[in-house]
Amino acid sequence: MVALAIHGGAGGDGPWKGPTDLDPDRIACMYGVLSRVGSLLESGVTALEAVTIAVEMLEDEPLFNAGRGSVLTEDGSITMDASIMNGSDYSAGSVVNVTKIRSPIRAARLVLDNGWPVMMNGDAADDFAVERGVEQVTQEWLRTSLRKAQWQKWKDSKAKPGSTDEDDKAVLDHDTEQMGTVGAVAIDYLGNLAAATSTGGMTGKPNGRIGDAPIIGAGTWADNKVAVSCTGVGEAFIRTCAAHEVAARFRAGESISSACNNMLNMVAPLGGRGGVIAIDAEGKIAIPFQTMLMYRGTWEDGVIKTGIGPDLFSH
Ligand code: ASP
Image (cartoon, rainbow, N blue to C red; front, side, top):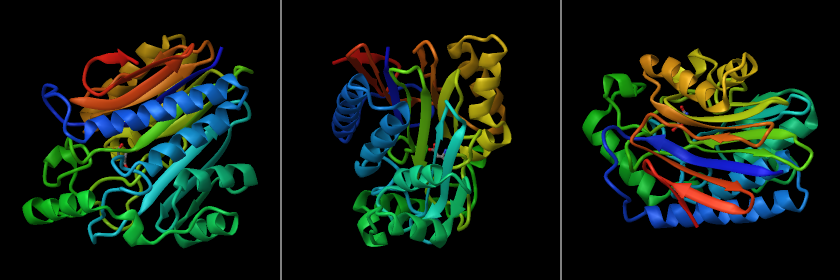
């Protein structure tokens, strides 16, 4: 039995107001990812390769906050974080604050495949990836007009670098139209699990900020029992080792869905509204969120479901 879950970020407060004009494209992208990568899993691709390809495809959709279309930092540039973990051998790879590559998750995967070190940052991480064949791109290519407009709104209204959702001084990635982070979790035909997460972070983030997405155990985790990818205000997910918290709770006997919900309940008081996708070694999937919405989808036994607000729809 193989299965896959993906997310395109969680965000917003209050009741679900229905889809925006941009949402059909996001749904189409998620559907494309689920159908392609679901079939690949069925044909024998490993969970590790499946989550790499899924996140790579999500990074390429400019409406999601990862790769091209990432949100802009305080100074208007793009810096991206990504990580990936393979559950069968605990191998992991992570890149932090990369600025000139098309696919941060492919770079993280190359770090994993290289075996040592686990994390690389900045120019060295970019160079490492480019030398190994990851496409080099310009900041101008990564920056979309949508993100530039959102950044300008942030700048005009609430320019306080480094402020977080809690003090509401920044327009974050968690406004309904400014949200993102993408991730995937999968189980393959051997029963192996893997997780991957990639993000541009949050609009107006200070230079040098590192979110939870590239931190193994915070934004991403996979072992031989569970694979997890988180989205939300990264600082709170770092402070709770959120992705690993799900694994620890699951190992202690909680169901996958209780483990995810209890983790989110730990993160929330720290200002970490968000969501999580997780899959266990029996192929059970949990995709809870505490925000207004979370872009998400699943592939199980050939059945594809996607959702944004409270409901999931079969395709
Ligand atoms: N977790 C990401 C970060 O803090 C943001 C997000 O998930 O929207 O960088």
